[in-house]
Image 1 (cartoon, rainbow, N blue to C red):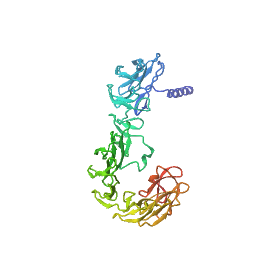
Image 2: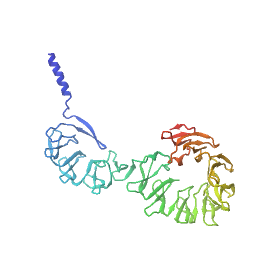
Image 3: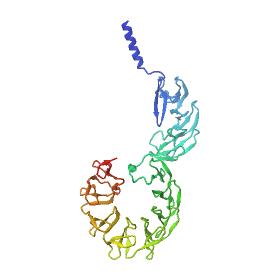
Image 4: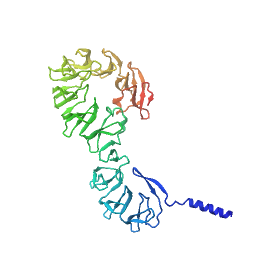
Length: 476
């Protein structure tokens, strides 16, 4: 009796290891998920693969493919050179001419054999590869719905996911109309503060034209411009196929037509436009020419003033009405704009540089070889030996910066410096070291070492890009 019980237990354990007929499982194919039944088949030359929509493709002894149902009955004869899973009621099969088409569950051909490569149907469309080597999409009638213009690393081609989106060219997401709606792959600098301009960034599209995406990388303005630039004051410069420039707003509307040979960004509501060389003027955001294009040169507005050169009788600074309010006398502009109430000018007599106030009076003598804008009450200047210093708004030297290999500008009370070991640190407005020179310099970040809201991006000793506060501590 004991022996019978032991044999029965062993038999049961052996049966437990045999796959159950009709056992189901879930497999993933591309972006879709299907429930299939795994059933053994013993009479086929190869093997029966996973079931999809109740049918499974098999290969006979002649190397031809057909389909069996869940009972193992051959329901579509083995006459195809190759075959794949059923998806949305259709399966792709290959004929003896090495072309793919599609059949239904009766085995009838519903889409003729035209392609060397195809994908399966998802969301009512299937990827097909054209004779030009590019992928497009067809619907269930075989009609081409999206032209042959896409690439993909996947052998089965691009396919739509459950959201009706497909990844093409390895970096774009398109909808079922073929429109690019998102940029999936982006440069590593995407997270830099300087990349997003007023919430949007210009991006080159799949056909070489430019559009704009938002912070989620979704396409907001279609790819249709020959060139595109960052937004400033709600407007962005764009260039059309005739190499003419204009402006669009954040909806993509062309507010100012592309008719100028060159333009500059809006600043304080005004933009410089060029009709041709030495024909420069100003427009407002409605496109009105506030200053006609008859100037030789001009600078952007800052602190309510802009430098212009319209000849000796019209050279100096104008207001936003186009009126000359500061006439150049004995000097010509260097910085072309005011910063903290002062503008750098060069003396006609000695060619050295100093600063004027908004009355046009020279308030800091012209004795410097190079001058920069004022930031935080200080300006970087260089003497005739090209040694750097910082001066205050009275012209007094407050920092001798000759010990540093390179120096930046002040922001929020601190200025970046490079020491003799090419290490980066920060000094305060007395010239004392506020943050030791322990960080690596980075040429990409070099122009952006400015504190903003109490923190700045730097590269640490391990080469990682991090944010630090004004004490040099790493912060999020």
